[in-house]
Amino acid sequence: MTTAQPLDVQPTPLALLLLGREADPRSERGVECPGDLPAPSDPDLVERARAAKAKLGDKVFVLGHHYQRDEVIEFADVTGDSFKLARDAAARPDAEYIVFCGVHFMAESADILTGDGQQVILPDLAAGCSMADMATAEQVAECWDVLTEAGIAEQVVPVSYMNSSADIKAFTGKHGGTICTSSNAKRALDWAFTQGSKVLFLPDQHLGRNTAVRDLGMSLDDCVVYNPHKPNGGLTADELRAAKMILWRGHCSVHGRFSLDSVNDVRERIPGVNVLVHPECKHEVVAAADHVGSTEYIIKALEAAPAGSKWAIGTELNLVRRLANRFAADDKEIVFLDKTVCFCSTMNRIDLPHLVWALESLADGKVVNRIQVDKETESFAKLALERMLALP
Image (cartoon, rainbow, N blue to C red; front, side):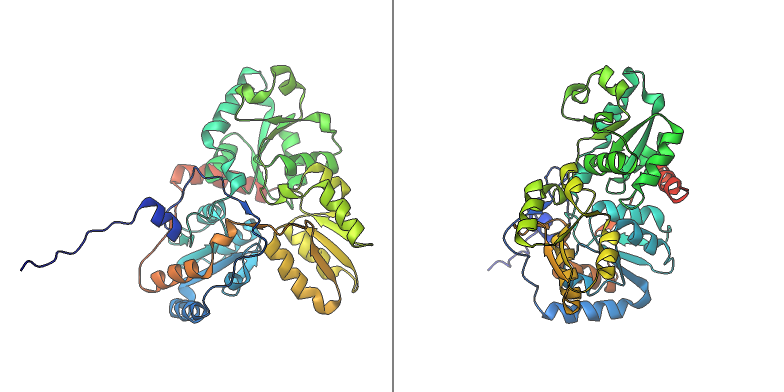
């Protein structure tokens, strides 16, 4: 009788992707509309998460982005938008592990801003960002060649949205540009136009256009859209020379869903409603809204809103539902702008099972899903981030 030999079974790439231990950079990720948010995870996982976090103590610092589901937010030490969270991580140098419940570019920013002795963990490596994926280092380098051939590269200052990869942030730093958030985009553009006569805005065309037109008083004709999938970006040299804002053809898959019809419909359904949208929405949506602002702006606006007021919010569903529940006792009616229930599917990949797996692994001394930016990329990306921090 022969003794059975143990099977040497290796997980397949698909299995690793489903487990959240690998990423698929080729996939278009961002938005799903199944009719409702994912169901809560097994309640037993709550106790496991508490136990693992307690065992780690001060060695771990958990960051939760506003768009995360409630079951994850429960275990966050701080919540906020992507840049606030990266700065919060940098302000905790004693934390050995930074567990970032967000998406890949956010964890990269945290790794750039934290110390060498800290390790940034992303519970699911497949939690990417469709907007960030719309601008690759190779595409942006090719765009710069096009601007050079048009004879305008020396006049162009790159301004990249925080929602971009470390490679794009590094390109921005290397070419004298800065990073911006949705809160300080106007200040970033004001600064950029003191450095040059044109801006290359990456990767969200809507934030760039809305800021230029609403806040800087430009016209839509001052803006052109560079399409990386077309020769020369689909633009002539004359069009590039005439433009003040060269907008990358990128967008947020969630905010891009909101339409002018959404605004008109909610005004018909809810008389007296205030429409409040994020500046990543399309220009016609922003133009038709009553209020426009970043995630933090939206939260503060609802905090200050009078009792009995009605609000339709154009941003990610998890946050809208959380705010609706929070202010229900104050008789504030808060609804999602679109009738179709829609959430950021990549944010929702960071669920309780992945968080528990990451925390328990760390508690057992095993570092998983570490996000590490190489030193050269980190150096130039940090330069761009520091220029943002120094904005007047």
